[in-house]
Image 1 (cartoon, one colour):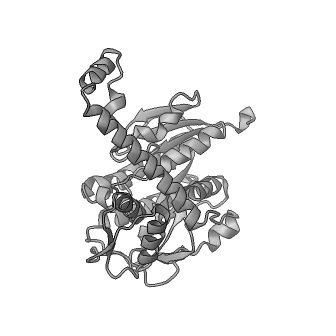
Image 2: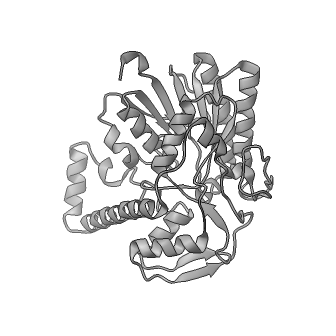
Image 3: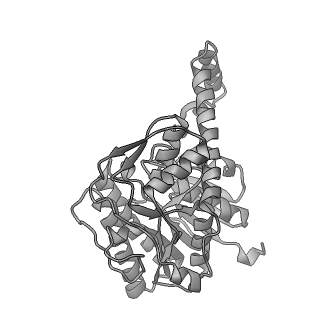
Length: 351
């Protein structure tokens, strides 16, 4: 990379599922990357391979407090994205979306940085139109259990547009649909991670409702490519859907994962959660025409790669559990503490 093309890039939520993949791509491209995360849902394991890189820096920080750094671009990915995590502290979830947006937009205004908001398909709620295009205003319950995330992200979009109109901040808004791949948390409550974890443990796959509700699933590498193209594009102040327009029912996904894992787990029917959307699928005409972007990874290939990650993760967890349960464990822990490295056995693992 030529020196004048090298940017200083801030990625908030950079130790999370999407953030860590984004940091990796930006570091590999030669940019100087500042990864900011409070590790509420992110994990140091996700960025362990970057810590020794000279153009990567990690800062533990909560975006609900101001941040004073000098950067050229900002990717705001800071917010828990799974229902299990964002509903466990709904007030903090709303603060992260709203206060976080205010603080980062203020930073972008001060340093004249371009800033991208990782918004979500949840701004469409339980949609009345299908597929969802960016001009659709949504159908959201403002007082439901999911509202902390849905309405928090909607308010963040409002703030981004108002900072653009009022202060001329250079903003981008990505409405991200269901994304899956390596580094998903096994216990995040989302359908792909749930089904894979259950299948690998030979537990019943929990299917909510009758399994006819639909989602579209985009592999993480494709999604990251979309984010990078959106940041580099001229789509200022225009929300852009990023997701896979190929739709699948929950039952179809369950069967795909049973096949990918070779599991004989049965399927168990449970009641549909409150405000769970019946269908979710993006219209990506805007991304296709403005970014020349379409997902490239077939679902079967993406699921194989994701299953391989979960198998390796569970194997590492099993090895560590066996090690810590052995007669050598006290000596190893003591030895780690003596050399100043006790964290490697128990901190930031996400297990």
